[in-house]
Image (cartoon, rainbow, N blue to C red; front, side, top):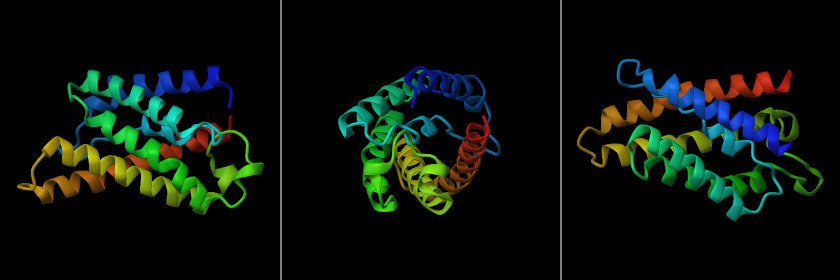
Length: 165
């Protein structure tokens, strides 16, 4: 992947997240997070430590913009850590692959499974760390589900747009 293009996409995602999506709270349950797509589409051959460092940097930017110290960073580092394990599980011939994770490189089914796991892990960590209690677990669970579904749909939409450009 062209790093200049990746940085541009990352800047666009963070801009979109901070200025638009962080200000949309539908019924208090839907808080979409599209910036995780930047972690998902990192190059496969990037070392795990670099993926985790990039995830931490993205998380810090989100923590600063949302005044949530450490919540997004922890979730981003976790999905950056899990991503190579999922790639190894879902991709049969990693050695032949070049570039990042896309629907074209790993197939629709594998992409959807990997995206589901990463979105659920990220959203579960964010909302459980944000609540930091199980007192209102039902509401937290609804936030995880609805925000996860909406984020999942947005990431798929962005992936489709990237595929067609």
